[in-house]
Image (cartoon, rainbow, N blue to C red):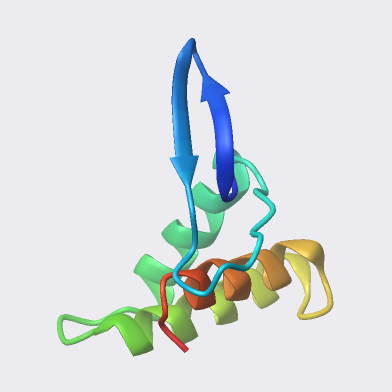
Length: 84
Protein backbone atom coordinates (compact mmCIF):
# COMPACT_ATOMS: atom_id res chain seq x y z
CA UNK A 1 0.00 0.00 0.00
CA UNK A 2 3.02 2.24 0.17
CA UNK A 3 4.05 4.96 2.55
CA UNK A 4 2.39 8.21 3.53
CA UNK A 5 -1.17 9.09 4.53
CA UNK A 6 -4.07 7.15 3.04
CA UNK A 7 -7.58 5.94 3.74
CA UNK A 8 -8.28 2.21 3.50
CA UNK A 9 -11.78 0.90 4.06
CA UNK A 10 -12.74 4.15 5.79
CA UNK A 11 -9.77 4.10 8.20
CA UNK A 12 -7.08 6.79 7.99
CA UNK A 13 -3.44 5.65 8.14
CA UNK A 14 -0.14 7.44 7.94
CA UNK A 15 2.86 5.24 7.21
CA UNK A 16 6.05 7.29 7.25
CA UNK A 17 9.40 5.69 6.48
CA UNK A 18 12.45 5.82 8.75
CA UNK A 19 14.46 7.66 6.12
CA UNK A 20 11.70 9.98 4.86
CA UNK A 21 11.56 8.28 1.47
CA UNK A 22 8.37 7.58 -0.45
CA UNK A 23 7.48 3.94 -1.09
CA UNK A 24 4.99 3.16 -3.83
CA UNK A 25 2.83 0.12 -3.13
CA UNK A 26 2.66 -2.81 -5.57
CA UNK A 27 -0.51 -4.39 -4.19
CA UNK A 28 -1.17 -7.22 -1.80
CA UNK A 29 -1.45 -9.91 -4.48
CA UNK A 30 2.08 -9.22 -5.76
CA UNK A 31 3.52 -8.93 -2.26
CA UNK A 32 1.88 -12.26 -1.35
CA UNK A 33 3.56 -13.92 -4.33
CA UNK A 34 6.95 -12.43 -3.47
CA UNK A 35 6.67 -13.37 0.21
CA UNK A 36 5.50 -16.92 -0.56
CA UNK A 37 8.35 -17.48 -3.03
CA UNK A 38 10.89 -16.11 -0.54
CA UNK A 39 9.42 -18.17 2.28
CA UNK A 40 9.40 -21.44 0.33
CA UNK A 41 12.62 -20.94 -1.63
CA UNK A 42 15.07 -18.70 0.24
CA UNK A 43 14.18 -18.48 3.93
CA UNK A 44 15.52 -20.91 6.50
CA UNK A 45 14.95 -21.34 10.22
CA UNK A 46 17.78 -18.87 10.86
CA UNK A 47 16.67 -16.12 8.45
CA UNK A 48 17.13 -12.68 10.01
CA UNK A 49 16.03 -9.29 8.67
CA UNK A 50 19.07 -8.88 6.44
CA UNK A 51 18.54 -12.33 4.93
CA UNK A 52 14.80 -11.69 4.60
CA UNK A 53 15.58 -8.56 2.59
CA UNK A 54 17.91 -10.52 0.34
CA UNK A 55 15.41 -13.36 -0.02
CA UNK A 56 12.49 -11.13 -0.90
CA UNK A 57 14.60 -9.24 -3.43
CA UNK A 58 15.67 -12.53 -5.01
CA UNK A 59 12.06 -13.68 -5.09
CA UNK A 60 10.91 -10.39 -6.65
CA UNK A 61 13.67 -10.74 -9.22
CA UNK A 62 12.59 -14.29 -10.00
CA UNK A 63 8.96 -13.27 -10.45
CA UNK A 64 9.20 -9.83 -12.03
CA UNK A 65 12.83 -9.21 -13.01
CA UNK A 66 15.49 -7.14 -11.27
CA UNK A 67 14.65 -4.05 -13.32
CA UNK A 68 10.94 -4.18 -12.46
CA UNK A 69 8.90 -1.73 -10.42
CA UNK A 70 8.08 -4.60 -8.06
CA UNK A 71 11.75 -5.35 -7.37
CA UNK A 72 12.49 -1.66 -6.78
CA UNK A 73 9.46 -1.31 -4.47
CA UNK A 74 10.55 -4.29 -2.36
CA UNK A 75 14.02 -2.74 -1.98
CA UNK A 76 12.53 0.66 -1.14
CA UNK A 77 10.24 -0.89 1.47
CA UNK A 78 13.17 -2.54 3.25
CA UNK A 79 15.18 0.71 3.10
CA UNK A 80 12.14 2.55 4.44
CA UNK A 81 12.29 0.47 7.62
CA UNK A 82 16.09 0.81 7.79
CA UNK A 83 17.05 -2.71 6.67
CA UNK A 84 19.75 -2.24 4.05
